[in-house]
Length: 157
Image: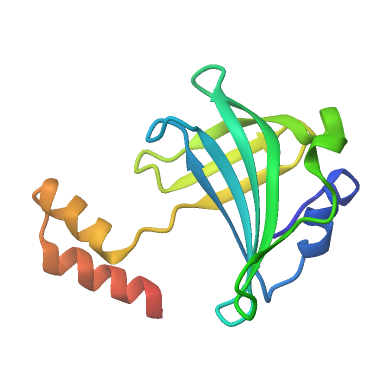
């Protein structure tokens, strides 16, 4: 994770800004469920676990998503339960609310540049699992072998 405005980052963002040993990603479920949510996840490692900060979300217009963080917890592999985030998000009031604008979405939908209410800009690349890629390739009537070989080339080189 990288930010050009470290002073505007949340305490969670400041912890992980510029650190290469963590994987930071975002799950966005707006139309697929009755409970639209945005989740920001910091994965420490496959052996340690992750921190998941979740927000209830709504679509304001074609480019803006409104959100309010409402739950957060550490899921550590060595514990059989989740550990709640130490600060109850409801106590943060307006600090737990915000918006996320999509400023660019690639034609394939795999790359998104977004800006949030505090000025942070995110560049996000959609992770496509091989099964999804194979199904998309078949549905678009492309050469499966060619697409999968190119994918392997892109991973290794």
